[in-house]
Image 1 (cartoon, rainbow, N blue to C red):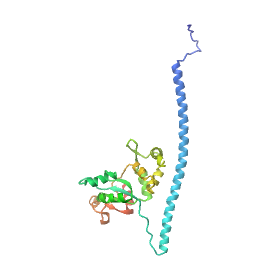
Image 2 (cartoon, rainbow, N blue to C red; image 1 turned 60 degrees about the horizontal axis):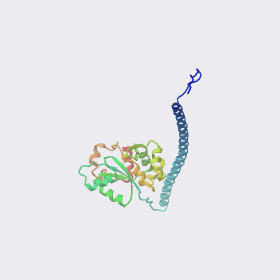
Image 3 (cartoon, helix red, strand yellow; image 1 turned 90 degrees about the horizontal axis):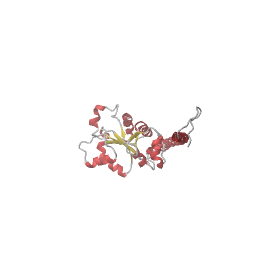
Image 4 (spheres, rainbow, N blue to C red; image 1 turned 90 degrees about the vertical axis):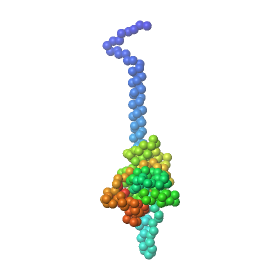
Length: 253
């Protein structure tokens, strides 16, 4: 086999270098196509999210208008309008673990209230109501409004990853990856599912990490400790405070 010395204009390139170059070029083309596809999907997803958020706003406004209308009709007829019993509660732990009965400790674990100032959403039913009676001296609870639910999730919302890690809600993609099977793809879907106690409330609520709140500000901190051992109706902090829970949550965000 004869060997020809390359001229000045001829350069021999190793075959391995050419293969690597072709592989790199192919990877760049595939990556560019993938990024373009992801950009297109995100744009379409934003349109869907915007439409859902707009529909939720209309639903919330309609519900408020219906309440006002029913109250006016009852007043005109000389009656009283009694709103429906709340189906959603927000429970906050206000007492530590000292001298806790094993049954109380177990119920607190079931509610995922492991630390003071931890808070969780709870669906109202017979079972949860009985459990709340057991732990009432250690918690305070009430019915949150839409503003409170939204601010809790946006300001203090964390999710539980598939590996069990606590992650902040920084992107709707995190929600979509975990809850797309439930039809929940964005933060507004989470808020709607929680506030309306929807069909997938359990999955969405378990997906949210228990809220870690601050000590109440403007809540007479000097009297917080002794007051928490009394019931709310007796001037303390424990037990059911109904819609007054919203003021407390606002002071703890």
